[in-house]
Structures are given as structure tokens and as C-alpha cells.
Amino acid sequence: METKLITTRLPVEVVLELKSIAKEEHLNRASLVRKMVMDKLEEYSLKKSADAYRKGTASMEESAVRANVSIWKMMDYVRENNITPPPETPEEMEHGLKRTEEIID
Image 1 (cartoon, rainbow, N blue to C red):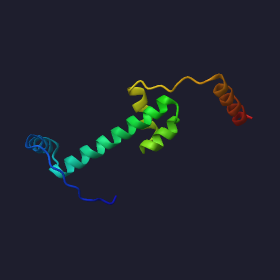
Image 2: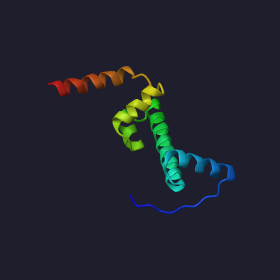
Image 3: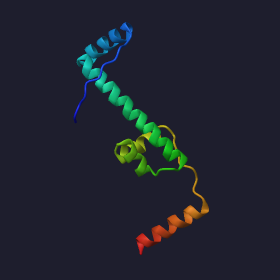
């Protein structure tokens, strides 16, 4: 993965906290900040994609692709956060049954 340097200013208290956590985790401060930022970005993507699933604008598979995670990770996230898609309309159920029949035949 290609990387690019960014800089930011943080309050001294935050920098001291990062230093303490980095020591506990046996990481240098830059690696810790990189890990935290990447974890937060993944969390944001999961939340946003799961919201699309909840609204019915994306399937479970589409949500996983949008979040750039495995289908299993998306399924775990949805289950852990009690996210369910909107109920299907009778027309959507009928369409699903027809597709299933086509697959079976």
C-alpha cells in the first residue's frame, strides 16, 4: 500500500496519552496513530454501509463491498448492532421466490 505523510496538531494531553498507549502496545507513536486512524475509518465504513443495508438501499453483499470488508465481517457487524433490513414487500417476496425457483430448476 502506498503511503503519504500527513501532519496534524494535537493537544499536549492527547500526545501524552498516545505515548502511554504506544508504550503499552509496544508500538511507536506513528504506528499507533496509523492503526487508530485506519481502525476508525473501517468502523465508519462499516457503520455507513450497514445503514444502507438497514434502509434497504444495499444488500448484505453490497454493503460488505462498500465497506471493503468480508461478507463475514459485515454479517458480524450487522448482528452485533441488531441491524435489520426493512421488511420485503409482497412483490419483492414474489420476485425472490421466482428467482429461487429458477435456480432450483
